[in-house]
Amino acid sequence: MILSLPIKSARTDATLAPLFGNAKHFAFVDEEGVITTQPMEQNGGKDVARTLLTHNVDVLIVSHLGLNPFVLLKTYGIKVYFGGEKRMTISQAVAAFHEDKLIQVTAENYEALLGSDHHASHSHTHNHSIGCGCGGHHVHA
View 1 (tube, rainbow, N blue to C red):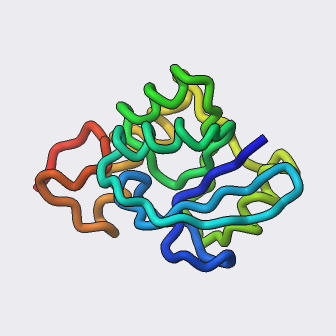
View 2: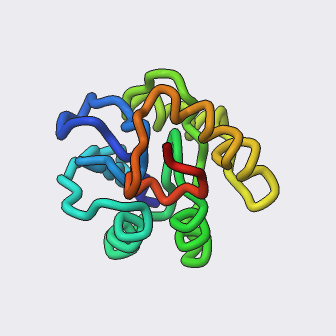
């Protein structure tokens, strides 16, 4: 199983990036727990999601993920887990996943975890503008 996480820097102890589609780096964790990081050249939720498909990712852990990339990932069988909004490192997120402490995002709970209500409060901390690339379905200021 390969886990993937959007991260703020290329370090293996980096924290999760707040916005999936704008993450500059991604971490990949293999079955043995080996962490590798790679820069993400794509920008925008759907393009980033398509890139993850080429890495054979099984699980994605995120703090925010727009509806369009969520649907794309789910269509290809990638399980999405909500990492929460607090600062979390790669190792903390992976440990929480293996300890069943993360909530799996489904069509039924997407709106409550990652949807427009969640994103509206999230956008106060992250200055979104036209074309922010998050893939969310929200009104830009």
